Length: 461
Image (cartoon, rainbow, N blue to C red; front, side, top):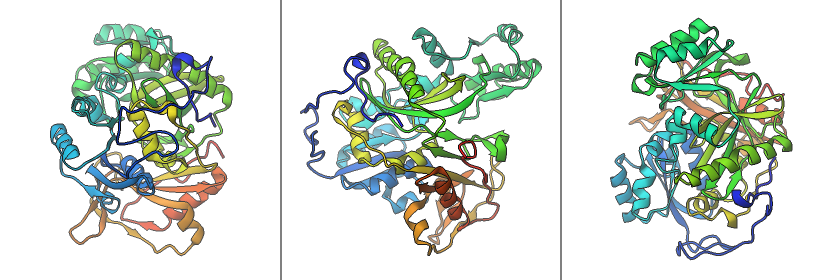
């Protein structure tokens, strides 16, 4: 597991520990041993399991008084208050009128659309990158060209809107071949073609607009990297950063990583597939040049830098960047956080990570996604969720549900209404123990057509 004190990128190697300073820029809060002068009110933007998990961490945080969700889901009303407000200006009005001290943005859409810019223009504290910085996820072409400009290791690629150029490059590659739509596609804009002909077909369908509309009218074609994949998250404030325990996601629908890609069927953290050498390489070759590069280009990066890594022969190669927590990785990372979540998010949002010492529980977390009957192919009929009474003390203490695609009915009951319905999270002293508890909890939950993988964390075990 990495050190949890990270220094300014410009002085990482020379001065790995920074002296604690105090700041008066945000008089409501103070640094040092006493984090808050008062409990804070927090607004979380989003509606999925990621946002529920952040809310669950804040609910247990003694620094937090009130939590709002916009829009939230059918279960977040158990943690705070759901708001039916989507317009960014109206949300900023609400924050001002209700004394909200911190806004945390969950999904990528509002970030790419500039919610942080709207809030910061009004002097409001918000956790997440600006619209310019969010291009790291909003445009795969921007991201790949940024990596190339700053010598961050990544797969050989071409970015183009020309089918002829795409074909020429595809003919230089051995299958499999990766074809990516440039814009946001809800995690579905990546095709791993098993032949040159399949890659050409994917490129043609994207560039014609048939596959992903405007998001695919420019594409990235790149070489396929053969290794194992990791999810690494750095909480950044533009200058300093904190690296969270590395996680591993399971994208395929079925056991043994078979079937179609999904938004994620489960994850676990920390993964033993990362060692100190890989963390050090990620620091030196990836995170430091990225933060320095973003600052040099006039878009300092604040928020979550989600680094999709492929480890090839011990070398970390960057597949992609996202600008928010992964889902379902967030569901495993939040319960591992021992320090107050409010302090981590607030100090990142206010440029004060140099004055923080983040600790994690010496535990493992495994999360198993329970999905609806027809996921990921089409929508499924709504189904009532029944959770058995849990009498097992071990399970009550070391496992919990993070709700995602759920709706609260007029009868007060919870119904499965989305593709990925909920995540069963188990904690343990080992991955095997955490996995066992997660699947014990799966057995306590029932809804018509439920499906899940039965092998989450199999690579580590």
